[in-house]
Image (tube, rainbow, N blue to C red; front, side, top):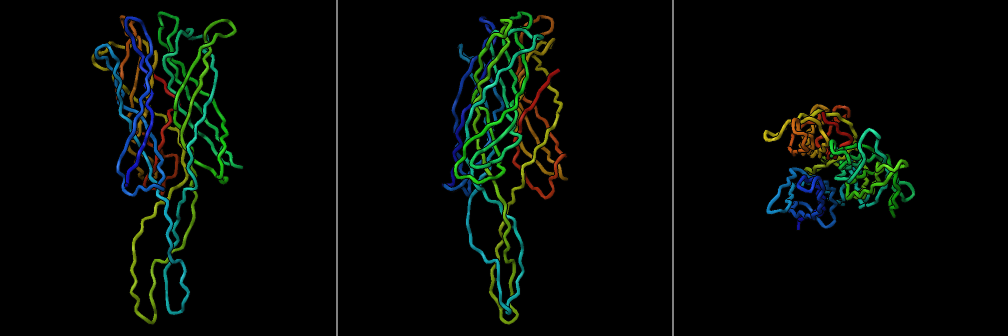
Length: 362
């Protein structure tokens, strides 16, 4: 009935300061989105991507209330099969032909797997008392299918905020990353170079002492989920016009729009973003932790450049100037990314996936 359904889970993590000190509150909420989409069929495929923005937390009658906006981007692919004439051999007729490029979705499969990694903090930062939050992003750098196996490699970027044992530096953030290789069995799939889309599902941590007995080792257990798909291209010759040299023909012509999906492009862009401190907040003496979740608004292709308009939620925990108290704020910022390192000739639109690789705040 031309309806699509998207389901998912939003994982909240709030860092709270009250009479009990600094602590974390975690919560998970399921969501579903049902919308009428013209052209959707039971045999359709949908490639969806979800991000959260405008995250707000507030206290009401002793309870912590959390809400956010879920931004969904999706591509609907309808498989179809039609018969048409591509050849006409007769001395009486003349014809014009054209070659069109067509895309075919070979397969789409959901995937889920977990990674485990251990990191040790530098002696320059205080020991860990409690991990407050982990913001992780995954970037798939290469993927191929061989002998029924999906072999992919990439990088996981970790931003860990923890409560330290140092009363003068109670909240600390450390940034780290690690490379991974994963092999997943895929049955009845031919060898190809697929596209992989992964999202963070869950992160669990445990704190361990190092050889000196200091609690500086963190073990990360990361759950990832997503989908893998592969597109192949083909060419077809179609008859665009035909006429007879002897008799009058009564032919009808119909315009058909074809969409050609090009190969995947990857680009790394650095961006400086200025964030204003809210008016009701004390000045900053030292930044303890900052997190940022970029969300795609829209993408325009102009003069072989990709102009990507984005917005994102900035969360900052800092030591206040003068008082030495720990404070924080959330604010929404808008920014623009221009990527001109790729050839965007003859491209009308693109499906963009953003991945935060690193963040530094001064």
